Length: 534
Image 1 (cartoon, rainbow, N blue to C red):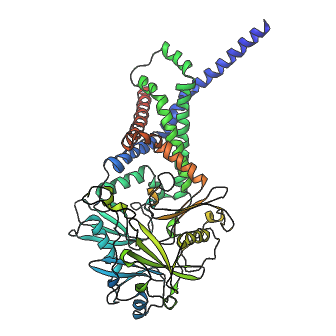
Image 2: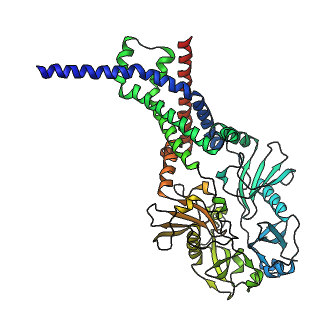
């Protein structure tokens, strides 16, 4: 009998405790909602625009990359050594061959980093060559030879309109006098399109950067304050979502009894009916957004991770126009140094493995994207092809970028606190090495920009994987387990990767509906508060 009385008292005590939570739950939920209504509106509105602008209304350009052409050996009347000697250049960083305006040039990178252009037919320097090449590239990508260039400038750091997601630096920005006020960014050192922004995209970038990335906080303080503010508000929004789940999920029976006595109508009814689903979406967006924001503390230095030793003209003995290779497939050449040996790094059109079907212009064989290249290394002293150097060179660069190799003062490697946490790969097992000619959506996606790259996966506690662009001796990306976890969190919870099975259209539509629902419920909650006050 006494046990029954004790049980009843315990039950009564529990119900009072729950009742007290219920009493304050609405109040907490309401206060948190009011505190975060403006950030929620900012984030949902800008989030709504992202799939619309990047997918449904994505601007197009005539050419998104420069097709590699076969370079005729007969066009190289002068070797790179002869050109450098005639122009009294004793030391330089590298060279490659470019073709534009019906001429062929050696593009030479000097010690300070500037690019000079010399005609391969007469060894004469092209004045303002880099600017002229930038304009030619821009017009090629746009397929626009008529519009006037309003402004041409060099961009050496990322800006509000040229974000770090574009990767390439330095680049030329060319603004064209057209109805769409097109701005084109090109990297002349590689001949690549970095990005292009018509008027609609310029406005969207400003809107998204201001209201989703909160760049206006940067303008009045600094990056750290911006990140702390965003994480704080996203945490509050997360608590709001959790309280919504608690009210409409775990304690639904108690609240349902209250609603049955005094049924709610109108806005209050709709606000509560869809509250649980909105809380789930809000929680996933807030958590993944805050987690993603934590990765933005360190400044972006990947664009400066490049190995660029100085070469003396007299050290290169074999003439580049006399290399022992298949000139019918020759596309370009540059130089590297590995183990105190200089090599010509030559890019050749890959040999056709299958015969091309005749009279089938629409087949996959006729696609430009299918034209791959192969890389061969030729000893600059013996003029002999040396196999497997590309992977060796990539391994050396990975070793170099982890402070495993000595740094020369000429090299543009910036040492950061992040480098100290990276292991030296001298004695660590290499688990996988392969050349990537296409983007892998999960690990090395389109956002990384550079191709082809060599993938090097090492047996470290963090399973560090390096992606090296040997053509430019650059670090394209470095991925650890922690990066993968954050990447999957953002992709699945923020960008709805789990909807990929339904296709990009349905996935983006689901994101739009989720963000729109959060916006509607937040506004409904605010209207309810105003009605109650009035």
